[in-house]
Image (cartoon, rainbow, N blue to C red; front, top):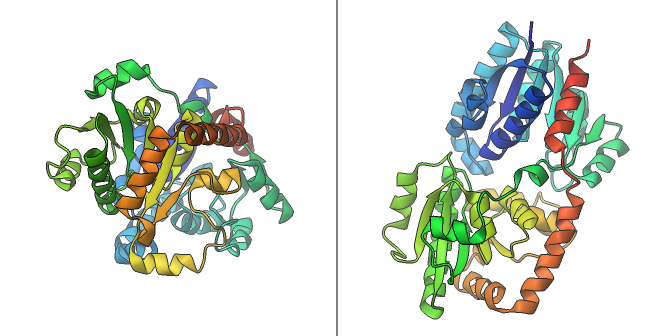
Length: 379
């Protein structure tokens, strides 16, 4: 009989990383019955979606409260399946508040728990580490400093390396990508990456569009490419754009790595995309905006100076962050032009981004997690 594994991946990035682990398991010949919370990538690999992550992708304290009843209903569906059809292992991927509640149920039913991609306990709400230690059989972490953090509090941990090191690769040359996007091969290109969740895109994309309009007015031969995550509805994106930047904005479904590769600079929402851009070596700026009340609460909880993962991993700010009230299109436009035309500034950032790449490990992250899963499945 194949092993049964429940996976809980509540966001597009978690769906992607979990799918990479499943592919690694299959490559090693470990075929499992999979079910749980995930998205299109896990579904394509044969996982039964008890809950579709696209139905619960919310960010921010206030947003979670607004959708609390819906989230609770989905959580109860997963708990019921844990009880009625217990897996040999529960694999939690990021999405910490939701997943730790699921881990509590797993503990009640005597189910082993692997937590892959650590909550950012080193950045905020450090007391969560005590709860994690009581609920999780093994942490699989992405950065060496996270391994040290958990070792110091005697929680089983394994540094597996960042899966993006293997995943972030373009499928086309720069010239071929520009042609595919409909961009003049000789024009400057800026990639706009507003995120993969509907709520964050609704808040961040308008800032990016106004920034692009300002750049377009002052600089000629600049094109903008917007890759649309498969978790998003392209019609909703078109409604937000509302015929702005008619001749210079190019939409493409997916192909985010090709956009990063072909762009001279990127304007990214804070999150995984900043690390992907670092692996591509493409200079960038970060902008983000959440519900004002959520920000007010989080501002007093976060203990690190920067929110961009690329800056956190480097150890200090190397990429400018335009967050909340600082997300002013006129300031962001000035920074983007700086990234395009100040060659010394570009070169310095590219060298710093290469340092970030070095800190993300040598690759093989998904395969390392697959091996760890096999260890935990042993009787």
